[in-house]
Image 1 (cartoon, helix red, strand yellow):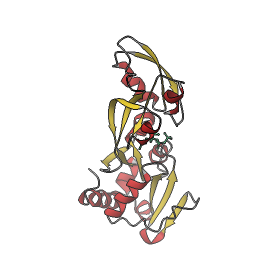
Image 2 (cartoon, helix red, strand yellow; image 1 turned 120 degrees about the horizontal axis):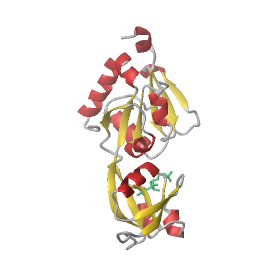
Image 3 (cartoon, protein in one colour; image 1 turned 90 degrees about the vertical axis):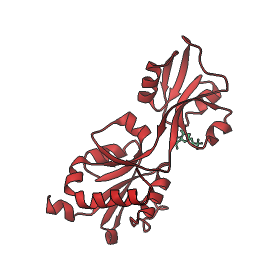
Image 4 (cartoon, helix red, strand yellow; image 1 turned 30 degrees about the vertical axis):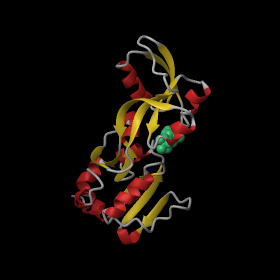
Length: 216
Ligand code: PRP
């Protein structure tokens, strides 16, 4: 083990999106002290010297790059995002909370007939294409950056592939889940080199998360 690396604060990347809350709850349950973080301010890198930690607040889609390139030792990011951006990362655990689904959504009864050609909006282009490869219908994919429900709601597209968690966004737009494509979970991702150089501390964290039954 490199003693210099081990003496540096552990650098944790937290997602700014919907996975932040379950991530903080999981760390709290595991006794990992993040309660001093300022969640209201605008500071994107915060030091917690008492906990020998440094925390980065990142957009979900950027987080895997920071961890893969060793700028952060570990982070939390959804499996939905990992399926799109990939990266050479270790994924030792998935959080029990914060689960959702990647689903085909549209107006009630909008499931395409076999052989039909439709327009499909999504920000999950890779996952949508993989799903379409096995579907009975074909689609022109419209890549969007967010608020994807508006596309079938306003007629930009016939369908969308998007995250459904509580279903509240669908309901607010008169849309329904036509098919669940796969389950989505917040994942712990770890930099490969850090898993060696910071092994003791990372193992302690993973064991604490598992013992608290907040990750599997
Ligand atoms: C996701 C998804 C829906 C919402 C679904 O948005 O795109 O808009 O969550 O959640 P619900 O079923 O609980 O209503 P996300 O937070 O990923 O942000 P986005 O608008 O950038 O897609």
